[in-house]
Image 1: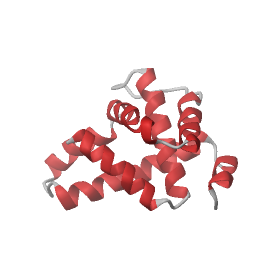
Image 2 (image 1 turned 30 degrees about the vertical axis):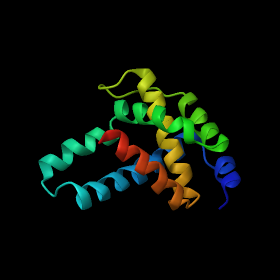
Image 3 (image 1 turned 180 degrees about the vertical axis):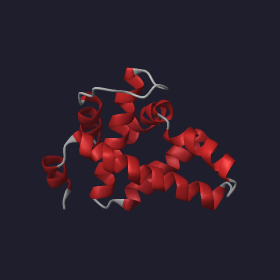
Image 4 (image 1 turned 45 degrees about the vertical axis):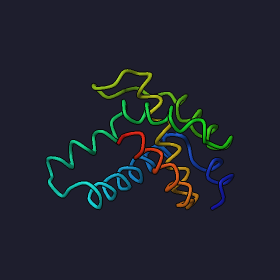
Length: 128
């Protein structure tokens, strides 16, 4: 499926849903290979990557290097109407995190692993 078809056929919440899973797997794979296999430490480090607060902050770091199409996906994800948000994040962070996850879903579905690896390298360098 090409990128235009993904944008046309998937809603922002669907992209965010898929992106949440794909990004979570990317993070966990990275942590196991590079940080630790201790479950307590893994859980804490995972939260550093996947919380709404972290994703909101990471999105700000990624924005300068995103393409116009990627920025459009983020905007759509951020602007989606949601009836709930997590207890640990304010509504603004939650919307940004949804945009971040929508971006990750878009890249995953477009099978652009090289782009995902490039952006994840920026993410790791930001968190480290």
